[in-house]
Length: 630
Image: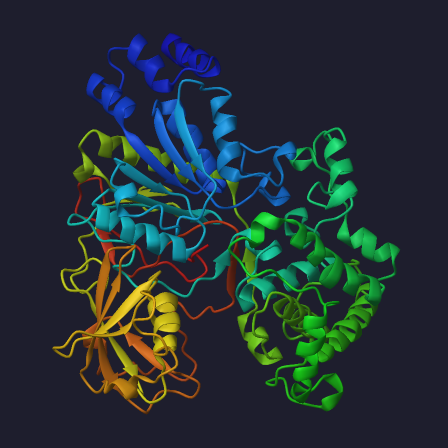
């Protein structure tokens, strides 16, 4: 007990757990070689959100003294309930910078370098990664995870990947030549997104659909402050004088982050759900506020409020799409004016439904016409604002689903596991590392944390194998080089700046960033370069130091609407799909999942040996509603 008391006092006084235990207890698990290894290690933490804050705090309290931290995001009010290094006064500031300052307030002897920047910036190339002993991921999107995975593989630096989804979590150690990489196993389509993306910087239709569902709940359903869709009069995020006055107020006792958010529901009820006022706030005024956050748009295309001439012209050009009165089916894409009309009419219908409801709230149901019309119209209006191609009501209905929130406790557990694995690595014991899964129900040994042996690399992995290659089924006369680069190499395969060379014995360069070399090639079809069955395209990404060969498989029998099909395993080329009974569903058929907010949990059908040394195995096959990417 005396030793524990000394440890707690030393932490409160600003010293590390490592210093406290090693100086007072010779039998401490922190032996001298571990003490020196931790002090001398140089770490790179990617992400300063839910997991990142917990991770940084744990690292400095254990005794790591040289940490570099990167995050592009700024602090949002919705972050304050679980990202504990941030407070009310930090809203709108850089996550990485504030996290650094918060930690230095109680550990002044630690060297923390913070970067408010994108991990995709060419300044953070392979040579930059090589300076670190360990890289720890605390990310919230697959594109960044893929990129960091490839940078660590190229730099031959160990990576500790982690993520959470609700009450589930995972930690995976990745090392080239020793373990599988992040991309060795196929991932399901991404279905979870950080809250700041939903609120501020949507880039995909699903982001706008989730936003519209949040809006439905704020107006008609169960209110959740974390799901508020826009700034309000009591929110320091608000622009100009209103935002300043919110920041100048004293913190509200008991409120999340010291901020009492004004209720969107209350405001809507006070205005009697006035459609004009709601439309103006959501699609005009709030967008002008977002435009005032200039840092958001340095590397992104800025949104266009619906009062702008650009959107008036866009709607005029789309008149052929029809509107509500055109009687078109749900598979047609509404015009902007059609979306506005549907927004107004569905708002009125939902208001009546709410007034007639026994408990004064509505539950969103995709089969309720008014609810579905509301989400479809609101989502499409937001897509128009953010230059995202609008979707039909049918498409939106198929994409909409349930929501799983981020859990602060899960983040804390997973960050702690990351630190334990990091300690093994810096002491030269990477072979002792485990892949750890936090599950919803205890296993037969009554454990919620399941440590499993690390899997070997997939010899067919298109990233870390000796000769990475994939097969592209395509009609060369229907795909341009630009589509190949943007949709396949960047969109599907995660490359950042790929060059494409035809392996024809001449080394014909088809596409490169070098000025003037391939000018005009982007709009040409693959067939114009004599790309045929079996043609091999060498694709190089110099930033990631990643090379890939694409083998062309010519086909004209793709499904309707498909431009291509990417096959990462040659054995799948002629595989016949398994036929299921008429009423049967696969375990992973639940396509109504959207996980909002944090991080990553990988899926897989494999079985891994348990770490207790026994012969039992722990199945990693979990239901689709348990394992998603967030």
